[in-house]
Image 1 (cartoon, one colour):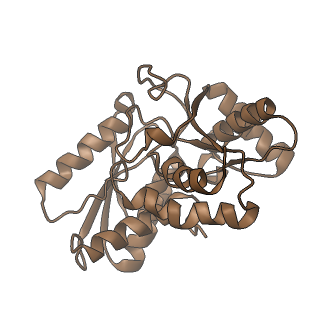
Image 2 (cartoon, helix red, strand yellow; image 1 turned 30 degrees about the vertical axis):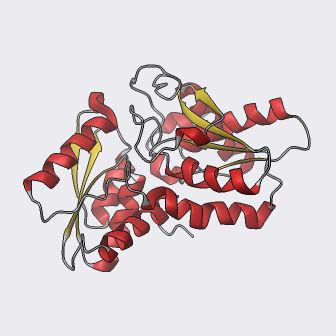
Image 3 (cartoon, helix red, strand yellow; image 1 turned 120 degrees about the vertical axis):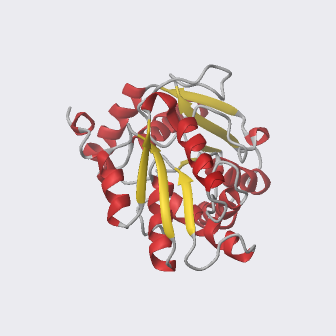
Amino acid sequence: RNPGGSVKDRVALAMVEAAEAEGLLRPGGTIVEPTSGNTGVGLALVAAVKGYRLVLVMPENMSLERRRLLRAYGARVELTPAAEGMAGAVRRAAELARDDPSWYMPDQFSNPANPEVHRRTTAREILAALGPRVDAFVAGVGTGGTLTGVGQVLRRACPGVQVVAVEPASSPVLSGGRPGPHAIQGIGAGFVPAVLDRGVIDEVVTVGDEEAREMTGRLAREEGLLCGLSSGAAVRAALEVARRLGRGRVVVTVLPDTGERYLSMEDLWTD
């Protein structure tokens, strides 16, 4: 289960517990991490329960709800210029960690605990529900942890499965393009994350901002699923894959977070 409302809750707990086991994080210590919001929320609830101080660095164009939620958990939030994207937040968090060596930076983009927790949990949940009859797995790439962890397990368990990565059309880094600004919060960091296993990817599908917005609104109005923009992008791509595969095939995707973090973006919820 994801008590903080996103798939990143399990990643946050896994990274903190791995750091504790390795002696990198001691009682009462400080965690610093770059985030687009969801990993930050996961770390904030874990830090609150375990008694750690938390400093989060995020681009200034992330939703207002995310900032307020992080501060409600007691985290300190530092904003970086929107034009610098996630790369700017990563650089600033690394600077803060260097300035005080006692601070611990999990670095979700390179931390092996990120894909590992998806191998142990998300992938097993999918197989428990569907068995080996998965024809395609489609997931947005932020850190790449979900796609890597789940993709590696499904490749072994599901003969012929296709693993499809989703990224913003205006920042098509995995497709060989240049990074750029986009509106799909949570995916498209603007660089290739270290934890991403590119060898597991069969195809990359790009989704435009408006396509993601339109699908996010449809999920709420037609399916009763109030999700974030990255969910809209994932479903848009999954439907494209499903149309190509044809009837009777099983396509799995992940809806990473709740739409309650985007209610200030009114254009998502209007026709």
